[in-house]
Length: 357
Image (cartoon, rainbow, N blue to C red; front, top):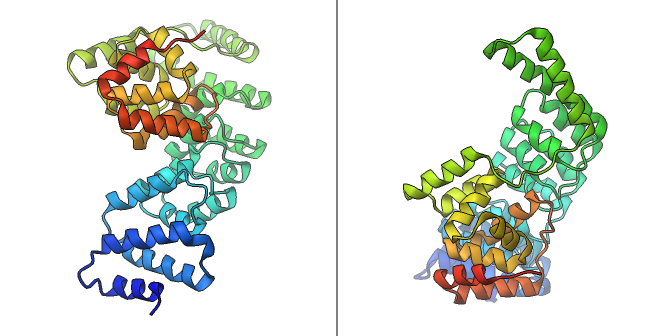
């Protein structure tokens, strides 16, 4: 009996071998020899993995997905199988796997959950076929992830849909307005209903003469149309107070950093990170955003963010500032080395000592 046949028999009748061990053995064999297997063998291995998936601990499947997420030689069928798994397993592959093309992603999300759609919406450099489909979503979190993805390529059709949806979904308005590639005509159209909504709110909650309110809103609309918004260097006082309060109460932790980063609240993210690594905010921003992957790795290591989350932190923080998200093989190796060999205390010390000309 061939090795494949024995593996198939073991999958059905473990005979003292755990299903987890069989799953990992088949996955490893598939990964290493995938290109040399014939169609029947590949189909058999795919079927074994699919049958075992529901019986294998999610932690094992997540670990396998993390290992394959940056692997350019892994069999595409194995990537697709895991990308169609629970979102916890699929996430690293949907975000990072270079093997997934737009057509593969379209096929995956056709039957996938909203969680899968949301992760795909944040994937770097997704093309117009994918963004056109995602822009039709009725799920606000998917739409928000899409408009916040600075590297996503949005067609004029996608922008039309998103701008129209922002008429009733207020949270889309600010990130849409901040996109550098938003067509000017659509930006002007947005001004009309944004100002109408604000005018209605002010009229209900404040006592002000209608004529005076109308003049003020018209002046504001002119400013929006003629002058691009400039980024704030200093966060709002309320954000600073929140971070101080969380720090004093002992609630300022890595989980808070990840939550505000996923929500696109970059002022809160920068303030919280600066507080946790004990580096002044202006200096932290220079180090974190100009120091390359190593600075991000040291910051993550120093505040207790796991290696498996590094790519998410790196991608989302770069996308928020319209910075490149590409990592070279040398970058990946340096990041791996820092997470494996540098202690949390040393990571904070090394981050503080980074200097740039």
